[in-house]
Image 1: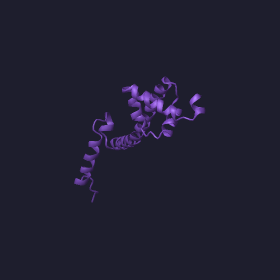
Image 2: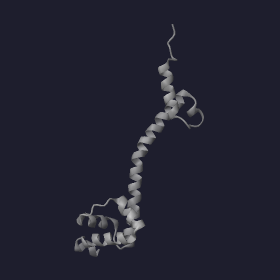
Image 3: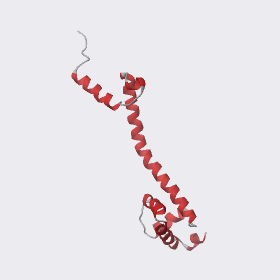
Image 4: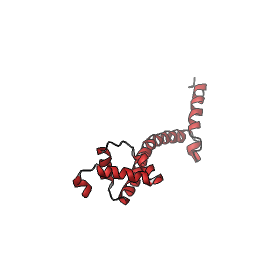
Length: 124
């Protein structure tokens, strides 16, 4: 007697995996073996890139802040050091948005950070 391969559970599993492969082009969306591999690869990339997105956004905010700080006569690392010394807890995303949307408020924050730098660093 042959092995049963077309049970309801098998069809349900295949339906579930095919749904995940919706939109895949060519054989990767049609042939079962390639379809399974494509779904696993897509899930791996999605997991990795969800974490990479956070990294990329933080890098973007740092670049924006660096440009905004240099325009105001202070470099990024001294600016962040001054914020910590002043006990100002604003994340880089919000600082970046402030630098773009309301430069006057950002100027005030930069001045506070400059005031809280040690004298030796403030002059440099």
